[in-house]
Image (cartoon, rainbow, N blue to C red; front, top):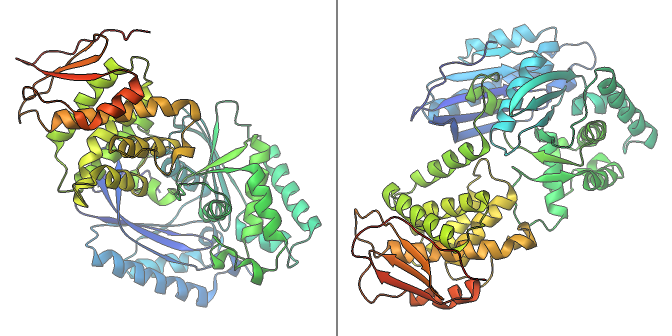
Length: 515
């Protein structure tokens, strides 16, 4: 398969199908400008094709027909939402099966243009999908599928090398874990086999600046189990960090149970009960070899990589991804107006520059997103728009944001709206950063009050001065004062707030606040 080119953009959706060793999945996307993918529809079926190869390396007529029924359903779902095109690939199980070509030909007769891709391309497209929407720069991407393990190393968000190993969760479970529950000897043999293969292929350690990104159903299920076991406040898998110590505890619990009892554990998809121990041991072995203390979970992967295009092309920076994702989210809401969002963001930027000259570029960026996204909350309720905007940004699966960043974004919106705390995700924000987050939130609250009173078409230039109090000169009505936020301003900044009307728009000027 060649690198994808000419993927449809705009309003016409297209479908991407992945026939894996454990399951088949389809996602129908729209590709927006800036490489942003909107999910339109999806479907999944647990095919277990990897298990069919145990005896004679053939899928067999029953498994082929089961797969074709799934593909017929996928085709119907894609057609139902008007998909203009379908991209369909098969991975480890089909490429190894002696009768894999039979499945491919029959799939094509159904209108599903199925292609078998090799392990290298699977790794490369998986890397593209996994890394694109995460704020990571260097490291490795790991995909534990049903039949194979794909690894890629990357530097500056560009792919470096890729490897494929026969260590998929179904395959290793069948090969190494005969007992139910598995024995210590069986699990040790599996870990040793993975470690020896990685060592023999000279897979390098991560290094001090590297992250290990994990994709695929095995990693997602392990992360989901860890979420249920911990008190992590944000129930999102994308960007979740699964630590080695927690993974060891999960493996201990999984391996101590029979498959039947394992299937009842919270967070585990029951159809993975027979393969999750093997898959988890592979993940742990990779972490130890690479020297990774944690896995950063990506809910994206092969399908998103195929939708995006060429794995050898450059990937946008995390900040670009965040900006595009936030703008795409905002544009879905009829209550959002780009002119209003830009002016409010400009006001907030001018205020925070004067109020907190030491604000970090990252927090300044989060303040800009909060100011731009505030009006999406009006789609639910005008009066509670701050709270609803905060809720939307933490449930919308925004791309490029860490969980800490989402916690900060939510906290800025909630505190700006009058919440006396930083909201339910305070624990995601480092203790030393919380005072700065409050300052940014008060700047947003003031920016919103100024924005509401500045005439349409007026740019909203401010003159900010410290004169024993903080004075803002703005194009607002005479004698107006933002009394609703005066107390919060004094509590956060230790000074009085005063607003005076401007006679004409002026550029921002600010003086350093007194000690």
